[in-house]
Length: 188
Image (cartoon, rainbow, N blue to C red; front, side):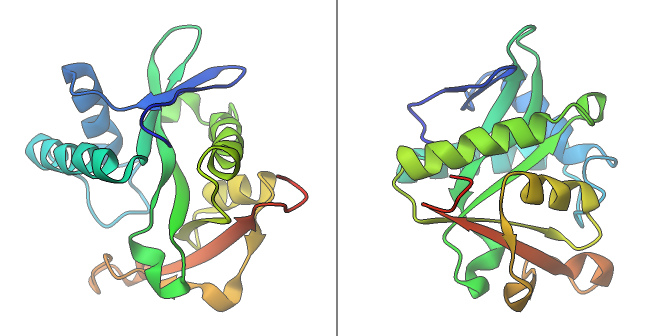
């Protein structure tokens, strides 16, 4: 998501991360909770989360867009880590920009990920002039794959890949499925 913008949906406000303790603490939570991180080979301690937070905020400032925080409009409570960002792992699949999400379990089943991802696709195509956006996940992550399908993305099994950041000690998390959507696709 563009750093100087804010996206408001029916129930969410998606905004850039700030240097606040509240944002840092939430970032740590979504990167350390074993339930949220079940499809990742790591859970971050607070020091590691703070280091990654600083790197992410600096990277977002350099490129002008990146990962963001989703808050409930009604309460202002942060509920998710989401956004549009330059890809890491899917470079091998020719992907440049990805969308993704991690939401706290208390809001699972409320379609927040779908609501935010749909708005982010619109933002990416209209405001960032992107041509293609991808999403990828471990093949067993049926909830994330369902979001990809609901927002109109298309599976590309020919572009599935072994994520280079996943160590060989976690073979069940290595293989990722890739979905994509283009500007001008019927959903957009």
